[in-house]
Image 1 (tube, rainbow, N blue to C red):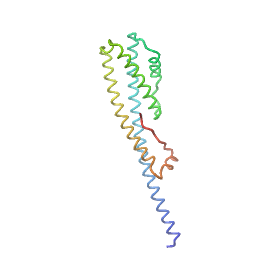
Image 2 (spheres, one colour):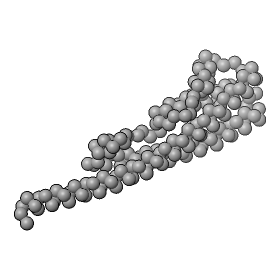
Image 3 (tube, rainbow, N blue to C red):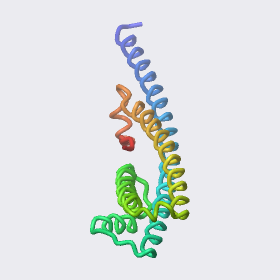
Image 4 (cartoon, one colour):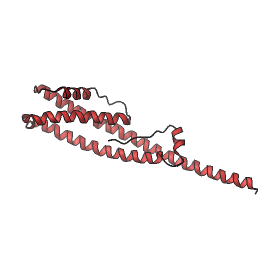
Length: 175
């Protein structure tokens, strides 16, 4: 063999190994992306349940003629305007912050009115919310671990440019 043939053979072998590595990375990224899609839908369902529960508590508070401050009204209005039809990481963080703020306001109202603490309806709502929150935290932890796996393959050396060209984008974990 001549030297140019040896160089060409080495280059072809390197190209073959690079393509094999790239296919391996892409297959792992597709699997993580599929899992992330399912996790995002599950998180949206849990968020929807939490917001519905908080809105039910607000309805009970309004029925009991509890007065709301301006900040409470704004938090409840933001909670009422939430829609859970689109799945994006930014919206998951934003929606989680809105739900948390509304929960803080409602919890403060309940804590400041002693007679509300003794009401069995509110204790039932609190137990249900705590259970939903625990499920949400578990799902968020699993989602964050899947994001870490996805980002591992996304930032794999020598493959980042190729996967960006193929349309894969980086993801951020939930707060």
